Amino acid sequence: MLPQEEQKLAQLFDQMVKALKRQGMSERTIGAYSRVVFRLGSFFDRCPDELEKKDLKKYFDYLIGTRSWSTVRADRCAMQFFWKHVLNRKWKWVNIVKPPQIRPIPDVLTVAETEKVINAVRELRYRIFLFTLYSMGLRLKECLSLKVSDIDSERMQIHIRNGKGRKDRMVPLPVATLKALRFFWKTHRNPEMLFPNQRGSASTIKKTSGHMHYAAAQQAFKCAIKDCGISKRITIHSLRHSFATHLVESGVHLRLIQELLGHEDPKTTLLYTKISEVSAQNRAQEVNSLVNRIRLNYNEKP
Image (cartoon, rainbow, N blue to C red; front, side, top):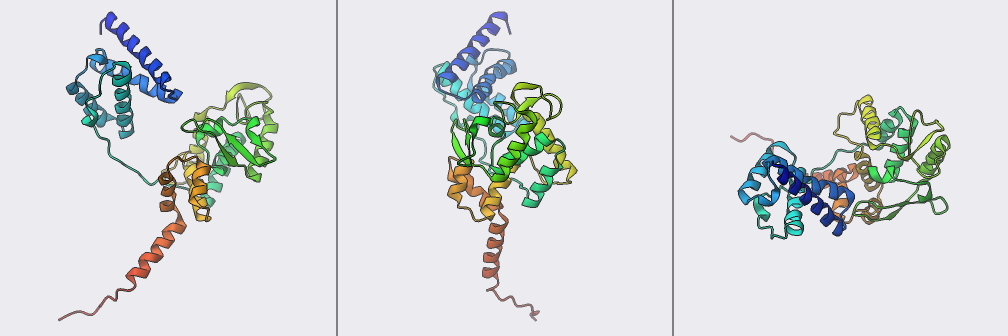
C-alpha cells in the first residue's frame, strides 16, 4: 500500500471511531468494529472504500475457512456500519453472508462440583473472587469492577453498574458472600476496589489502582478445573450458567432469574430449563408416562 493510501486508511479508521462514539457504542464495540477497517485494508492491500461485492465475497470465504462464525457475524455488522455511517453508502450486500443461528446448550457444574472447584483454587483472592462471581451470577467484568461503595449491607444488595448493554441492576447479596468479601477486604484494605490489582500475595500492603487482571482469574479457574479432573467444557463464564441452573432446580421463578442475571430477552433465561436436572427428570417422567402406555408384544410371530 502506498504512503498516501496508508494515510487515507488511517483517516477512515479515525472516522469509524468517531462515528461509533456518536452512535453511543461501548468501548468494546468501538474497538472490535474499528479494527475491521485495518483488517480489510491489510487483506486487500488497499483502502476498504474501494472494495466491491466480489471482494467482500472473497474476504468472507477466507473468514469462514479460518475464523469462528461469531467473528464472521461481528465483521459483517462492522462493515455494514462502516458503509452506512462512514462511507455514506447503502449497504447492498446484506445477504452476502448469513451466519447460522446456533444456540448451543452449555455445560454446567453441579452444586457439589462448584464447591469442589472453588475450594481447589490455590490463591485466596481468586477463590473468593470466583465464589462471589458464582453466588450472584455475575459476568466476569461485572465482578472485577465491583467497588466497596457498591455494597449495601443494610439492604443486603450489590449495585451492578454498567453491565451488558450499559444497564445497571441490583442483585441480592448472600450473607456468605458478604462474610467472604469482608474477610478478603481486611487483607488489602483498598479504599475503592473489592478486588484490586495487587502485587505479590493477597496480604501485601502495597496497593495499585484498578482491579485484578481478568486473565489471572481465568487461569486460576482453569487450573482448579484441571486439578479436580473435570472433563466438561467449562470456562469461568460457566459459573454464571451453573448459578442460573441451580436456581431453576431450586424452584426459583424464571422471571426472577431473568432479573438477577440482567437478561433482556426471557428466551435467554429459558435456556436453563433445558440444562436443569429437575427439568430433565420431569421430561423423562413425561416421556416414560407416554411410552409406558404402549404395550409391546415380545412373542415371535410365525
